[in-house]
Length: 116
Figure 1 (cartoon, rainbow, N blue to C red):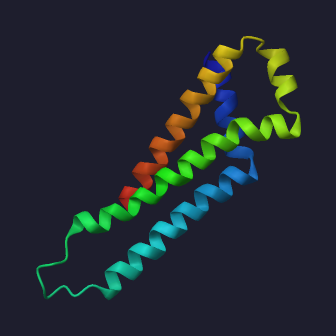
Figure 2: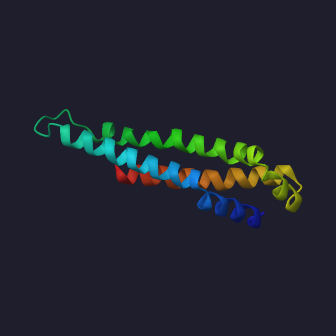
């Protein structure tokens, strides 16, 4: 099972789509956070950090898209066949994808909250 998870993490690190999605969510969170910070009036007490941390919620949408693309692009490009030859148990394969992408989503969320 650990080999399947490490294989999914390698796929996640090495595909351009995953890297582009992660870079875009980081850029979007930083950009919106900067705009919100630069336009805020800090002399008033209305500025709350909870509103600023709400910007990190954009990471959830990108993590959802990343998880959906993890499964569907393998079927679209036909790369699921070698994966199923190596690991014919589909339940273990889907569980490995779930664990790997849940870990990636967690890291993405922590990164987004840390950036805001």
